[in-house]
Length: 199
Image 1 (cartoon, rainbow, N blue to C red):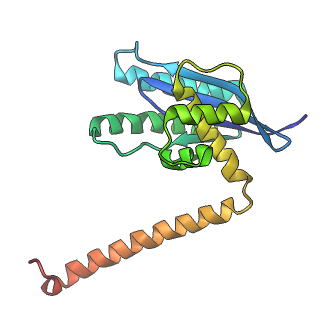
Image 2: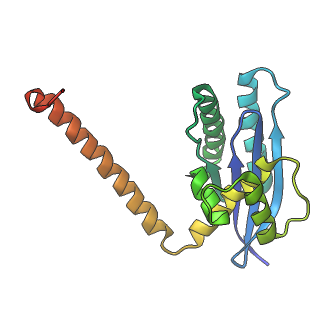
Image 3: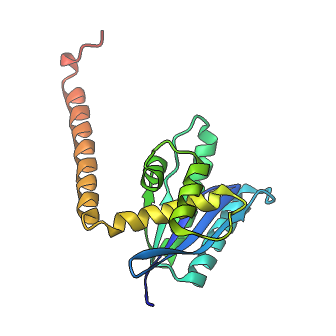
């Protein structure tokens, strides 16, 4: 059986980073790897970031994925945590780009919705649903691993949809239109200060 595509899924983190490798064979996903990169013992944050970069390269060079699917940082109350998470995501993407790997990112709610049908599902629900869908034998010690699998699975589902490329193009156009309308409003405010009611 020929492998049609290999997707590397990453759930970025600076303490525990989850990763998974998903093979697509005859249109069906099969779990190859489901694991985590445990970083808590590395005290220096810069060394953690370096470890994420080097480890992502090692995973790519070992399994030769065609695409990286990565979870987008969520917006939380702790700004420092968000910034650190963004750095972890950034170096993983940089490692993929250094190997000419394409990538896509997915919002947490989108991933949960795709896997469970509920955008507010918990990590445990996501793990249970993935196990029932793909029948992987061992339950991972950390749910970060199944979160990474969920990202890869979301990518598989999206790319299996023949309208996925059209939807992606529409989303890009919508973002550009929103940005351009914001700029137009900003320009109007600057050019017409007398027409703005400041209350």
